[in-house]
Image (tube, rainbow, N blue to C red; front, side, top):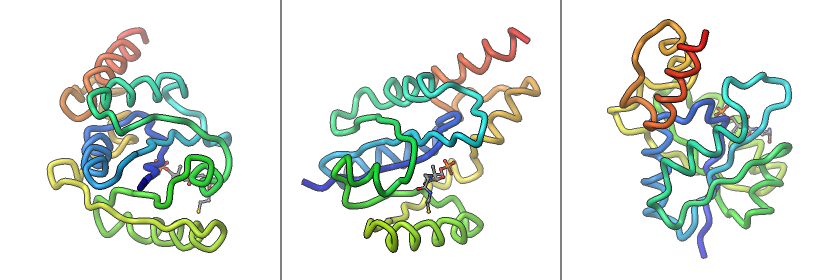
Length: 159
Ligand code: PNS
C-alpha cells in the first residue's frame, strides 16, 4: 500500500492546498494530511479548527485522512506508515527551502519527498496572504474552502 503524507501548518487551508491533496489522492492508496503544530508560532486558527476545515473540505475523498502532529516530521511519517512526503511548489521561490527540508528529512529519517506543482490557478495563494486580505476586509471566497471563508468572515466581523 502506498501512503503519502502532505504536511503543513494549514493556517488556514487554501484552495491550493486542497487541490494538491486531491491530486495526490489519485496517485497514492492513502493520503495522510498532517497538520503540524509549531509551538514557537501563534496560529490564527486553533488546531481543532484547522483539522476540521480540512476534514470538511476533503470529506468526499475516502483515501484521505487528516491527522495532527507535534515534533519531527519524519517521526510522523514513520508513525503513519508514509513512504513519501508530498509538498506543493508554487514557484521557484518555494524551491530553496523545500529542497533543504527534503534533504534534511531524507538524511535524518530516510523519508523521500516528492514535489507537486501547484495548479496555475492557485499559484499566487498563501495562507499568510489570505489572512492579510481577510483581516483588511477583502473577500477570500473561492480562494479557500467554504468553511474557512465563513470562519474568517465571522472572526473579522467580531472585531
Ligand atoms: O505549511 P508550512 O508552515 O510551510 O509547513 C512547514 C512544515 C510543517 C512542513 C515544517 O515546518 C516541518 O516539517 N515541521 C516539523 C518539524 C521538523 O521536522 N523540522 C525539520 C524539517 S527539515
